[in-house]
Image (cartoon, rainbow, N blue to C red; front, side):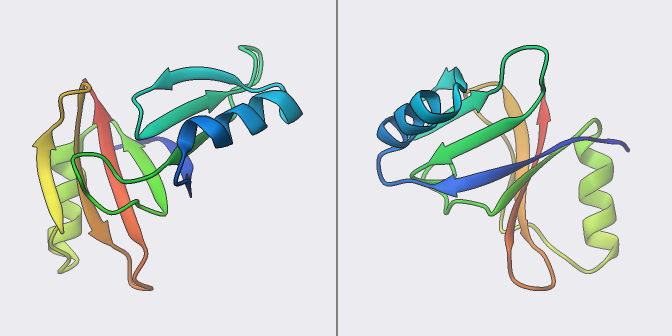
Length: 116
């Protein structure tokens, strides 16, 4: 299994309003807007990304970070081998990802996600 990306998630009661701030001040661009979460990116020559969300999707709490992987089943097996069971999922979401949530040893909620 390879980690494909790690993305911070900033809590935002109004993701669209906070996204406008980051667009206006830093020149970020909206990549996706699902209402409850907005994905912002830098121009194409810079791969930075920021997510602003009011929840974690499907009514779940907002994870502190999202870690993209290329093999969700292997990530799940590794978590279980470490004695960690998911708090949510694994599940296929309507927006085209397969994912689960787990807590790291410090109690942070982590979204482990694979794009279809």
